[in-house]
Every structure is written in C-alpha cells, then in structure tokens.
Image (cartoon, rainbow, N blue to C red; front, side, top):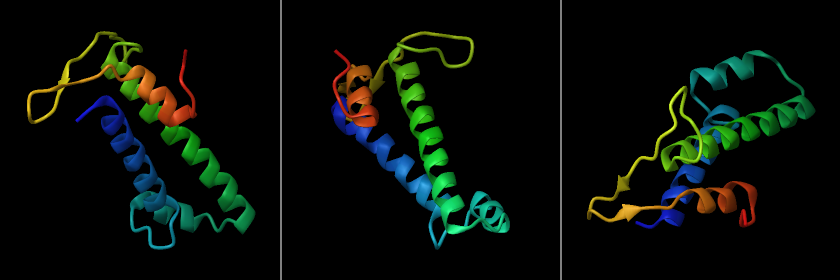
Length: 106
C-alpha cells in the first residue's frame, strides 16, 4: 500500500462516518441525537457541512500526526507505518493535503 491509498482509506472512513451520522439509515447514537433535534432540511444541510468539516480536519490532523508533521496531544514525533508486506507507507503529509484539501501543498 502506498501513501495515497492509505490516505484515501481514511477519506473513505470519513465519508462512512458522516453517512452513519447524517444518512437516512444511520443507526449510531450520534444519528439518534441528530434526529432528536428535529432539524429542518436546511439545518440538516448546515449540520452536515459542519460535521464534514470536523471529520475532515480530524482525519487530516491525525494523518499529519502519524507523519510527524503535527502533534497528537502533547507529543510530536514521526511514526513508521508499514503494510502487511512490510512496506513503509509514507510520506503521508502531501498525500493527505491533496486528498483532504484538493491540491498539492507545495
């Protein structure tokens, strides 16, 4: 697995989580809490956009934390991620930027 595939998997997870929270068939606790709010269609769209941004920023920051480009909590260090074949996955930072922000960071 290369860095682009690794990052894209995180982006897929973000999409799955958003759908679990905001989708018509969401069965998570969060989905129940959102449903209980009784939001209008426009409010649901606004909340979806906010949650999408929160999940995007969280996934991006966690990926940068693993790459050593951001801290995770109080610590900042680089981690080595390897796939099942023993191949190093990285560097992650540029692929994460492209995936979550749409263009190369340089």
